[in-house]
Length: 256
Image (cartoon, rainbow, N blue to C red; front, side, top):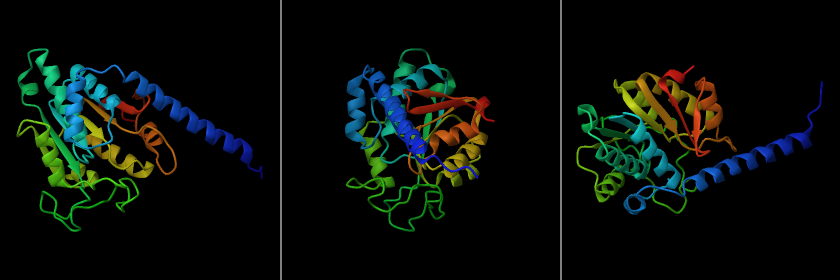
């Protein structure tokens, strides 16, 4: 039986990390030239979060180039991505005469909002679950920052000035929502669990909820430690693209 070349394995692991870091750095540099920085700053001040200029630039590109009146955001936290999407949609519609469908655009945001009291019911009356999210223990991912709650996300989006009725937030796990919503969306953005198995499960369910010609995308395109977003995306799609080295995207027709 052939032995393992541990030195080679270590070198490959280090190389992989450097390649990932370089890819992310390129994406951040690419995002330095942004449209309407004042609007982005308003969203950032209203909605605490981890999304950066790269995400702002990505959503502006999506809303400008892809018809998507029905938007689904899996993984809301305090609503920054939703604010980015809403501002991007308004900017895109202001530049052209919208279709009737585009004029009625809506964003559905789904999150377990695990900062709410344990056992707090979901918005559909059932118990909320953490089935595919990262462990909710303080310090794992949100050390030193507020845990997400439904009320806090709603307040943040109000402070961002999002028109009432455009956004609906739902307290539910991503997989439970996708299994039961019975709806289709033109754009689905995935930012929940980053583990390989859970990400694959979400993507497979999202396929049936993505309208023909629709786009699906997600954050944190890399595999480090326990995370496996890149591997999950490669398993689920015959082809995909990566925006700024960090945000993956594909069409419904790209599913394997």
